[in-house]
Length: 366
Image (cartoon, rainbow, N blue to C red; front, top):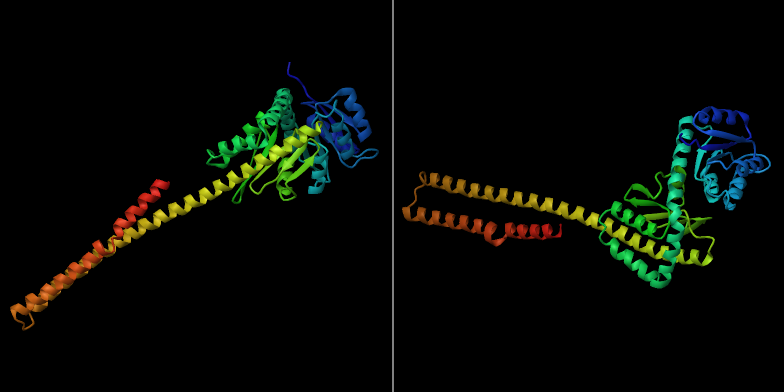
């Protein structure tokens, strides 16, 4: 039999509860509560798999309710999605700070809410599986840090990052590195005008994206309980399971992440520069090809002009009363001028050879 998840809907407006029951009732076991205090009671009694939580409620508002649930080790792993009319950046930041996984604005779209519930439950299950080994992995990582030192670890990452030639490769390396240390992260990578997200989680919520986009210039490190956002110009990292319960580990981890972040940002900048240089080089190669073609075209035109002049002068001699010696002398002068003109193109300027040499140098760079 397929496992049926339990969802707790918390809202002081009965109509909202009715809508949620209608929307989710056929797919989930839906429990209800009218305020924060009753929510906490139901959570301890029934251990739901997910909570849909309103913000504006009597007795205990949603933010404080979420904070109390996340501060309690027995309920901290339950994912919470805020469903509220208060959906500005400030409210979303407040919700994320106390540990919410996502945010749905009222009046909500039924399909959107249903999709977010399904995705959050799926992601939570995947992360729970990942976290089974992350605690031991993190302890091993901290021992390794104490032995090898932060600088050595950063140098290892920096050396490995030199092989990355694209944002995708660098982001993959970062995710692999954080996995070694038992960290679950989401990356925000900015290149030119485009922004791309990467994550250990199977889904990246709009709340995470909104947070990372709008908090990008609010300082290098921003702490949200167990979450830490590390900001750089091109690469931002949201760590979701910092070891806040151990102050020493937390401090050492942040120091190390700072070194790694510096190395990742430096490599991201280099990738941008290399891409720009490659564009310039390819453009230069195209221009040189055009110059070479234009030069050859002009050289052919020059030969044609001289040949035409030679022919027309020969025809003109028939109408001029000149001695044979004078005609031969004039023809000799024309031939000499023609030879010098050709030499100017082929030997004097040496443009074709220079262009070929420069093209070979460009090809060696590419």
